[in-house]
Image (tube, rainbow, N blue to C red):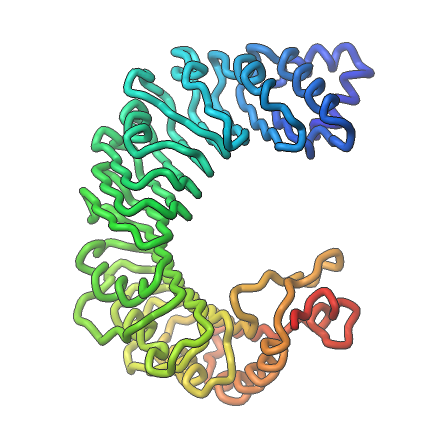
Length: 429
């Protein structure tokens, strides 16, 4: 039941009100409280709800938006909410607010499993004490130093997942070896972070955006990798087969590729799923799709391939017996791209599904739902898309095996029609 409906029913039913006061999961923000009134009313509602649920909350999501001027109320709300027995805590606070570590009492540290903190300062020290059940830690736009985070991590010995987003004070991150269960690391938009030294012995899944020096104690355990930075395709092909030979899933996102990748003898023997996103508009013909072809040659176990880019290509005569699914985002009528697609169709004997999407960047589509519209696209995309469809029908369609399902996606007939009712919403000049 939505929070607003629960509050209305509680006003009418004593039995429901009694039960409601023991409801353990609370989401408190302007949306769930249906706030269109004054700041004072928002504060009173949150006050009443947390007071009535004192000592019973298991999961709390509290989003304090600036316009409600609740700075002086946060301490009291957190003291009510942070009680022994709480298991999940998600707080979006003020950037100038410093989360008081004293609220992480021994009782709270003994029960909390998931801790997510947004938009504030956080300064844990060595005497914090052990967070004995904490498995998931996420810090978003939080100010802390590398030493402070290391103190927190050292006290969270059962941690399994760590996410850092837009944390711009940290320059160096060390993940201690005591985190034997830590397997997932996500670091995005931490602009000042230069180096990560990970000594956790079972790290297997990393997402990392920006050019950050990464040192892994046990790189052979790596199964999934998502990297985003300049020249990452070249780097991944040249370096990663020897560093992380057991990768199974890899996503590479590059804004620029300065050099071509030669055919190399090293292999990704276990790589099954590969996504390559090259977003630069002015890729030179010399770069082509040679990087992609090199990956195809190096990945004999590849099952799915999702390339997103728009340059020329070279092909190799190599059979891909495991490749089952290929999706090319931004498919165009460029001769070299058509040739590459034909090469994939010819060499992938086990191919079950081929998707050629003429829109670039993986735009969301309405999927035929009447209450939705597709994302906007540029006029250049709308002009090229019909040519891409014709090229696919003329040169590729008859080469696709009967056992392969071909999905050829042009612009949406409803949303992307220049003369249609959605034209002004969907066409970006």
